[in-house]
Length: 156
Image (cartoon, rainbow, N blue to C red; front, side, top):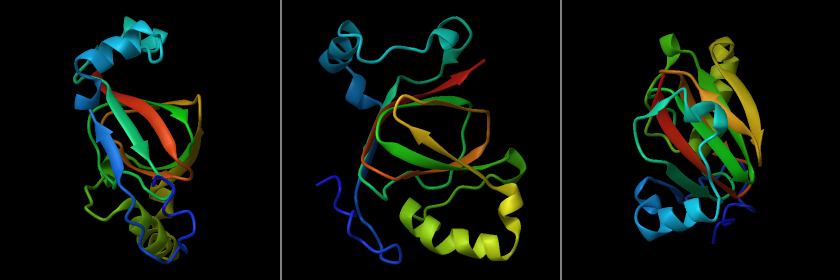
């Protein structure tokens, strides 16, 4: 059940799965999604960027998300739901295995206590919003509601 963490207190660990997969789009599913016009490459990207991977589908319940990590530039289109992004400039980007919910409830308060939040930015993404992530910026995504969308890494 996607909203299994809806009644979990912010101090409890949430174990809702977060699906983020390129292979979802292969074969007939990809052809169907493109034919129906359900998902399209943003017009600004069609002639300016070179995709480094296929589109990646993501689906996650409330309080799920991707741990802190970084990679090359990417865009992320939220089709349904709401998510919070925590962003760190390249000089402060790190990889973490800590699940998003645990990071938000345990690590983030400690960072704020130590006044390190000046290196950390945050924004909320609503359905229909497209977020463009620059090269090597650290980021953690945290679903504030069941969220569905696509993402794609690219090079300029």
